[in-house]
Length: 150
Length: 420
Image 1 (cartoon, each protein chain N blue to C red):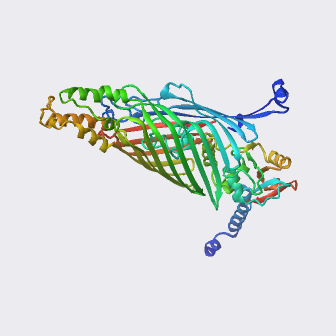
Image 2: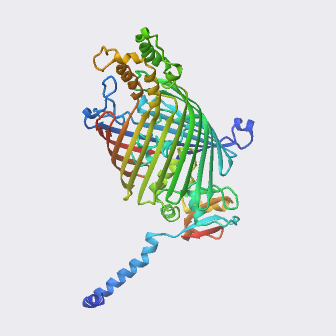
Image 3: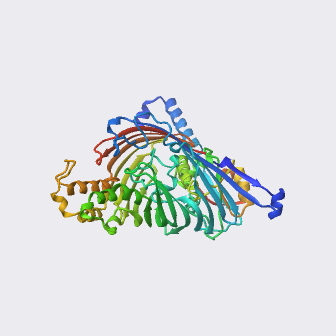
């Protein structure tokens, strides 16, 4: 590798290194926004990411402490949702849709309510002690409790 | 789907005031539709019925067909608060000229977060895909394996259902207990018009365990079954035979005839299945059998299939291999034949087709027991393309080896399934 680089003109090599460096810096925020899963500040339950996954697959309807869960979703295709579905629910959006269609049309579940932005989720979680939602980590404030960031 | 949620607040209306202040009902509308088109590739390979007419294959014949498998459905769910909800699903099918029917109509109550009690009309969950049989979007194939999924129209029930979902270690356990009655109109190859079939007392248990990408399922159901064709059998089979044997003063015993009639006969249904679905690929397999006791069929249907697919972006190529067969009531047949007068062995068969009159009548009775038999291997190759967030396009080549009729029908079908 080094020998190959050393044969290149110094300027070109430098430029290439900068370009790669710049790409590496951009990549994390571009390819995967960090997602925070949030609940109301008064919710003291110990909630794992596995619990969150189960909630969004309708496999659990209550928090570990027994309280009923009001799960909040975001618009399909939004950055937060794409990331959340892939990292936490571990499905892609099409699979998630087919999965939920089986629950909806058999009466086994009502899908989480869809909010149209991170701000709307934040507001709903602040106002509802039973709520759980996900937003981009940058949007988190101290008015909600973060269960985990992924 | 979410846009369809209508929040109907009646707080200010006079009606609401008369009930209680701030009564609110969450109404939610969802729907699904499938539009399917298909054609049989070679009509000479279509099986024939007893009258010599070609039977359709998977709902298709040699004419391009735009209607027979189309489905359009609307579902409404009202959350009444206090863990109580009411759901109804109205389905219109192309095969019945879009005559809309209530497939589901029930009230559910969450006894606990894990335990739900439902009362009303719902689909009977005999198979993995029974619950969403009409929701083409929810599965990869155009039709779930049709031979295995054949249950003679007894697919819905009026009754009570208890569902229990709980965590066991890292596993999600789902159990359903159901009891109810199910009536249908049956089409039997020996009859020209549909007849009534009744399952007055159905008891059913299903249990599934899911962990991440693995799901296993088992089902057991039992019931009694009655099919309204005693009179048909008497006037078309037993009476003519007895009349022709009048010189012998011959009558079949009631016990022997009972081996053919389906009158409050015991029926048992068993099934197992699994789903392996890590994401990039999936494998689904299911095996089920229905056993009848003291009726002309011993095993009206025993089906099994494996279906596997790859998810490559928006494309899902898949393959399904299926085998289905049935068995008749051999003991019942032998008992009837055993009662025929032995003297018939030395009487000439007037049709000339058989060695003697005994053989002729045995063959006639055998035809009765054989009427509903089938044995088929099926192979399907298809591709699902998720071209839109709420819609999928599917194309499938369907082929079968029908051992009973000795034909190999095949068809090409395409479908668009949407949910909204």
